[in-house]
Length: 146
Image 1 (cartoon, one colour):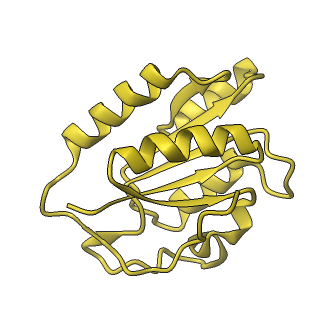
Image 2 (image 1 turned 120 degrees about the horizontal axis):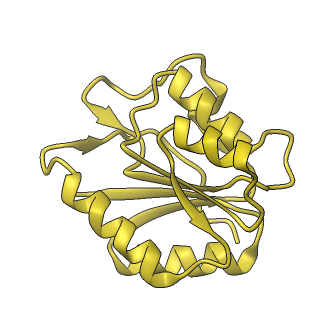
């Protein structure tokens, strides 16, 4: 089964670390410093065919220096019908309000500095829940930008 991950973070070390973990687990990786590059964010509805999704997981830093914050990005994706089954958010400065917002969106929470074993455990859980018959769409996503 093909697996694809979208990683959004402004920190070169983080995207390198997370990207390497995902590549070693067989994921196609789409890494960007900017959530506005995601094509499904720009559409008013999810462009993926009904029985597909564009990525297996999304991991986004909530504190990117961007016009769009990761939690707003995720809220928009979900509101547009995005079917990505696993979404995680990360930050070194979680406030109670941001934690509650992320949880209300169904996001897994990571605290920075990231711990490799925590990421690996979350990926193990995500992969156990994946339907082996599920399919990725051919929707072009951002390339690995570092």
